[in-house]
Length: 68
Image 1 (cartoon, rainbow, N blue to C red):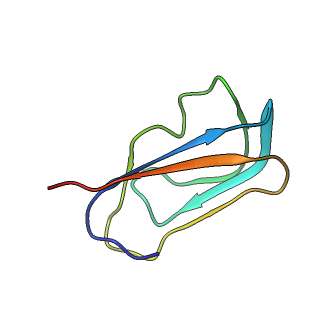
Image 2 (spheres, rainbow, N blue to C red):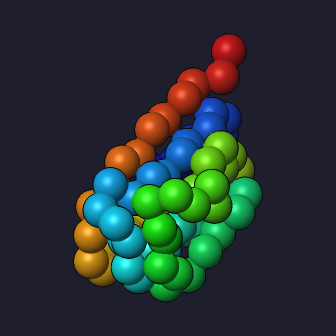
Image 3 (cartoon, rainbow, N blue to C red):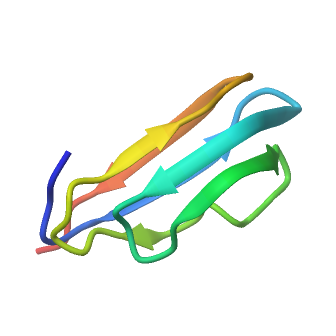
């Protein structure tokens, strides 16, 4: 997905989402374990590059907020 504006938040729905990678956003991460209680995935911003979110094991909830 390529966006120039907006925010995206990523939350683990399982106890721990393993191997989470977020690319093309203001705060990229590579192959991390994201616990359900973590704030790490909250309010990331699009920067006009193609973005990608992936998880090796577990479930993620991804919330996209447009900015006006």
